[in-house]
Image 1 (spheres, rainbow, N blue to C red):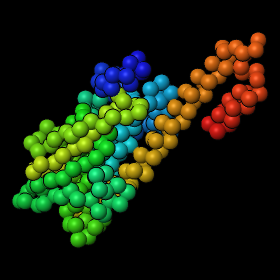
Image 2 (image 1 turned 30 degrees about the horizontal axis):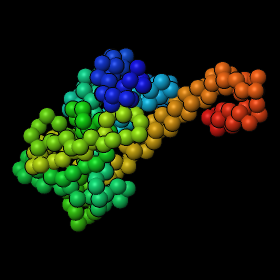
Image 3 (image 1 turned 90 degrees about the vertical axis):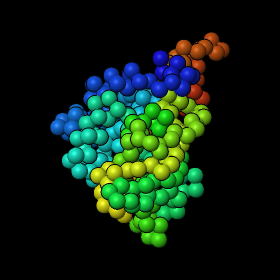
Image 4 (image 1 turned 180 degrees about the vertical axis):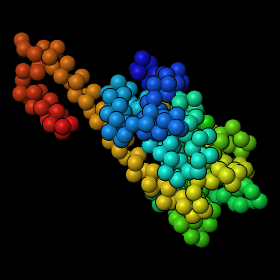
Length: 267
């Protein structure tokens, strides 16, 4: 099934919904917000095992947990937690995280998107790149400039509802793998974001973005470990099955040493 999803690039909506019902989309989310209420170790172990089977499901799970729910739980209001975290942790909705722009990656202070205050709303314009889950996301934690003169201290964070006018899903990016976890651009065209959807205070965006990414790196490490374990197990199985010169290839030192090195690096 994982190979079929990867070949077609189809978003696995049914299995993601089921994962939500089982608690995987909000493992560290407190039960009062619809999560499983478990700790980081439980999250990492679950993510590692899922990525052994399909890294696309693991990536979607990681974004929902580490990048979306985590940031709102740390910096959001009670109203924001109940509205957005509960929906994503349950698997009913999909979350995304949007920081990168075509001309702004790790140098976030140069981002060109803008949010201009207008009454009790912000008008957002700009373009975001490489947003995981963007083609299917219901909500997005998005970072943009509210005061360009302050550079990274002028970045603010917003909770974006993808159903509102001005939210445009851009081109879907072609990838070498993990295709069922879709990635695309997002364009904001006079998108009106209510002030109550601002995450934290004006200028808190860079601090929030970095704090969320720090937690997200734990998820990335767990994904990589799960993929490595799957590669190791596949290699062992093949070495025990394939024959050459009258012996299983796993009996040759050239192969057995490589497999031993794989296991050592995993551990």
